[in-house]
Image (cartoon, rainbow, N blue to C red; front, side, top):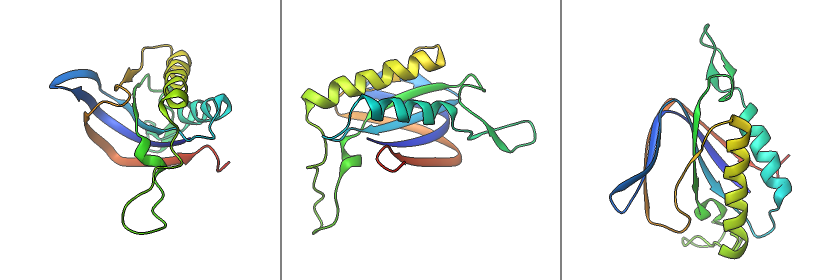
Length: 149
């Protein structure tokens, strides 16, 4: 499972011209689910993301987590994170999980983040053509692969 975490001052997901989710201070998480991922990968990423100290403390040092600052989170499914670019110029998505596996793990990830933060998490819509807008604060962008522990 791969995640790209962006610290944002605002973010939104629009589908078919309608805003589905929007947040202010918090994290935009792009989540890619692989065919060999499991609930263990979900648990690992949720723990890492919720505890990651990437928000500034009063001295401006990145010492606070999204939980510490009472931030919000939007999670967007992103199968293209699983792309292999080793051969040629057309990415291969063979490592990405199919709907039957990816949808339940994406849902579990969103529920676990929501439980950890004690607030509703914004989402996109699995498989939809989404327009994601954000103001990356910092900028701070972190990539995490649950298989690289």
